[in-house]
Image 1: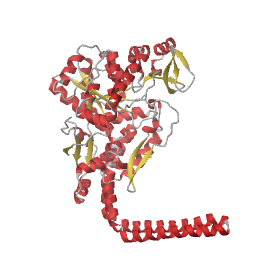
Image 2 (image 1 turned 90 degrees about the vertical axis):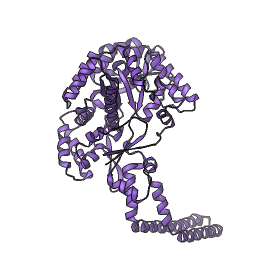
Image 3 (image 1 turned 135 degrees about the vertical axis):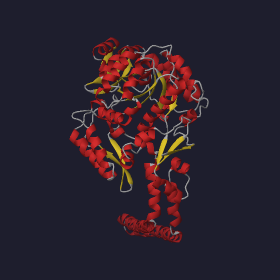
Image 4 (image 1 turned 45 degrees about the horizontal axis):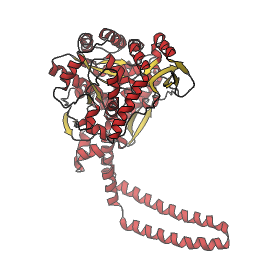
Length: 539
């Protein structure tokens, strides 16, 4: 594997300016990540705060007890219990880890933690926060694979129609095994497939939820790097969070007001805001009849946003005391909860996360905290040798391919092959026929008004025949140039599948099946630097 850096701007303008640390975007955060002493200053700031270290480590150790472990994991536990700080990122529990950017986030956490531990001469632990409390099952129940030259969604067959947390979604082991087997069949037999199938079978255990399966898969890949993971919906964690939920409930109005004020500041600078938040938002979910219900303030109490359930503040606090597992955070309060629990040296996020974290600055200040340095995660494109060869054969720019794909170049190539004289003749005949049919319709209508739709239908038959001729001509051109077009398809499906970044669509299982079970280790061990450039990994 070799690394190449490309200057590719982020998808949204806000994140792009943040990566370059340009004003006014930097004013929406507490730290400038380009300053050399940013992490040493953050370390000093954390030294002035108290964290529930012992309870947190006990909670994480309990959660990870059934997950693959290592001496490095035990060492991380010991560090965190004493005076270590953490680099943290989070993501939903996608099946088979979901899109590649989940892997990229974890690699980012591990690399930055290792880098800063050396620079600061202070223990730094990598942590991954699994958003098991999220209830959008449709976002995590599939992966994308290439089939018949197209990138297609492969959905897990067991359905969930309610709004239960993903940590409450259990899978049937037999169904899961069959689904993964079908995926490996699509990926194709390699020297690594049988071993990968056995490993997947070992990860699937009886009567477990998809979040635990996700955590087990992640720790199989990253246990030797001392990674710690925690499910946000874990019962012991929720008990640890209870005092902080009390703050969120008692200060829900002020937190919302602070976010709205920050949004106005951002909008005044010409940026769109990411968080959809009403003035009555409580920013807390409550589990009602096994579904997550988003609460809003209603007078002195709280109500379910979509139903009539109402709770006084005292009743909600009572639920917190007796059943803390029924409460969960939304996108506004999760970062606050994370910062109360963890001594966070840095939070690693993608472009969308960077944009919405900028809207939380005043909320952090209101709760007496600084927002941690928000480090953009590594943006990575994996470039296979065969794909690189096709890019070279077509004399394409790698940077342009990564940024915009090749569909436009492919279309230009097809257009250059079209017989312009034939198209000109067809258009001329079509124009002539349409003019003539106007006269025919007029004459026919004079005879009988019922003849008018018959004339229109007759003209439509001619138009369809012209279109049929065009399509057959185009198919003949495609067939004659299939080899050249297949080069474009290979590049597009690998680098910009379905017109988007590789990391937002493809899954790590493809690369493990093709390049071996140690693929992730080799990727993680590359000398990545956090310089804001896009990383291309040449295989």
